[in-house]
Image (cartoon, rainbow over all chains, first blue to last red; front, side, top):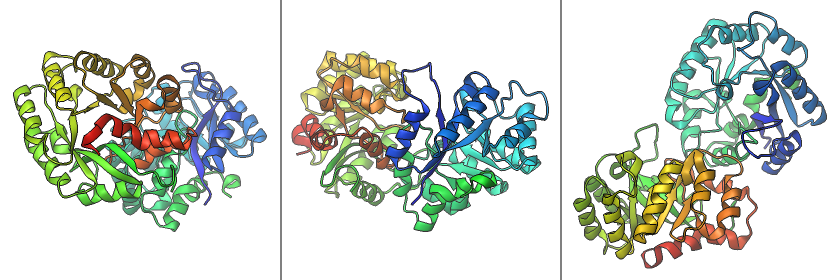
Amino acid sequence: MKWVDGNTFFGSWPHRRLDVSAEELVRLLKEAGTSRALTLSLAAPKLDAVEGNDLTRQACIKHRELIPFAAVDPRKYTGEGPVTRAREVGAAALRITNAMNAFPLDISPVEEIVHEAAANDLTVFVDITDWGDATVCERLAETTGARIAMLGVRYAILTESIVSMKRAKGLYLGIAKLDTPDAIRASCDEVGPERIFFESGAPFNYARCARDVAEHNHLTDDELDWVSSKTVLSLLSEEYRS
Amino acid sequence: MMGGAGIRRIDVHTHSGAMPNIHFLTTREDLERVEREAGVEKAVVSSARAVFYDMITGNAETFAVTRPSPMLYMYIYVDPHRVDESLAEMEKYQHRPHVAGIKTRHGYHGVPADCEAYLTIFRRAAKLELPCLAHAYSHQEVSELHRAAEKTGEKIILAHMGAAQWKASVDTVKDSHLTWLDASVSYNEYDKIGYALDVLGVSRMVFGTDATLLSPWWTISMFESVGLADAEKHAIYRENALGIFGRRLA
C-alpha cells in the first residue's frame, strides 16, 4: 500500500538541535515506508514566504519524493495575487502555518487567501489547534467553496471537526494526532475514508506513528487505501494526483 | 508482529471506563482486545472513574474490572486530599491478587507531589511494595515526583515523561535510581525516545501506552523508530516492569 504524507517540513530549526534538512526528511520518510510527502521549507513561516516557496520548489525538483506546498503569509497579505502566483509556479496545495506563526484563522487575510485558493482550485491546508478552529474552517469552506484540509486534529476536539465536516463537504481530516485505538475508525464511519488522510508532521514528529495507529484501527483495505494516499492525492493540483 | 516478534509485553499504563472526551472503547473486553492485538500479556489498569472523579468508587470499579481477567492488574488510586482514606484503600486492596501498585495525578489535585500528604502516602506505599504510576505532564511535575521518590524511597514511574517538556524532564532524573519513564503521550516529537535512551539508558524506560485512551501502537511506533536491539526491546517492553513491580506482577 502506498503512503503519502500530507504534512512535512524541511530547512533549518533554531529552536532545537535537530537535523531538519531535506535530505534527512527524505531519509526519515524512506525509513517509515512513506512514498511521497507534501512539504514546505521552514523559511516560509520563519523568514519569508516567497523565499520559502522558492526553496520548497528547488527541494522538490531535487527530491522527487517531495511535493511542493506553497505558503501565503497573512501577515504580509494585503490583497489578491500571492495565491495565483503560487499556482502559476506549480504549487500542489496551499499551506497556512497558523500554528507555527500563532495567528487565528478567523481573520480577514485568511478569508481572502482561502477565497483566492478556491478561485485557483488549490486546497488549503491549515492547523487545527483548539476548539473553534474547525468551525471557522466550516464557515470558510461554505462561503468560499474551497477545499480545506485540517491538520493535527486531536481526539479531544475531534467531535467539532466531525460535526463541521458533516455540515461542510469541503473539509478534510488529517490523522497525525488521532492517536487512539478508535478515532480513525469512528471518523471513517462518520464522514467516510475519502475525506480522511495520512499526515505525520515529520521531521518534528515521528514519521510513522500515525500510520501504525491507522493500520491497527480496524479499517478495511479499501478504507486504508483512501486514508494512506488516495484522499490526500485527490486534494492536490491535477499534475500531482497520480 | 511489528515491534519484536515473540516479546510478551507488559503495559504499565492503561485505563478502563469512559473518559471525559470522545472515546468508545471503554469495557474490559475492549481493553483486553486492544492490548492483546498489541502483543501485551499483562496490563496494569486504573479506572477513569478513580482518576477523574472519585477514588473509592473508582478503585472498586478497577478491582471489578481486573479481578476476572488473567491479563489485567490493578492500580489503587490515591488522593492527596484524602490521606487517611488513601492509606485505607491501600490496606484494603494490597493483599488482593493482581494488585500491582498505586496511581495518582497530583497536578489534577492541585498540590505538589512532594507535599507532606503525598510523602505520607508514598512512604506507606514503599513499605507495602506498591510502586506508583504518577501522571507527570510537565517538568515541574517530574521534578516534584523526583524529589518525592528521593525522600520516601517509593519507586515512581513518570507517566508521559513530562509531555512537551520531555527534554528537561529527562535531564532532571538522570541520576535517579527510583524513577522510570513511560513514554505514552500524544506529543510524539522526534527524537525524544532516542534522547531519553542516550541520557538514561535502556533500564530506565518502561512500556506504558495509556490504552484505551491512546492506541498502544502509538508508543510502540516511537520505540520501533529507534532501532533497538532485541535485548533492549525485551528490557523496555517487559523486563524493566518486572524489576519494578517484582512479586506483584510475577
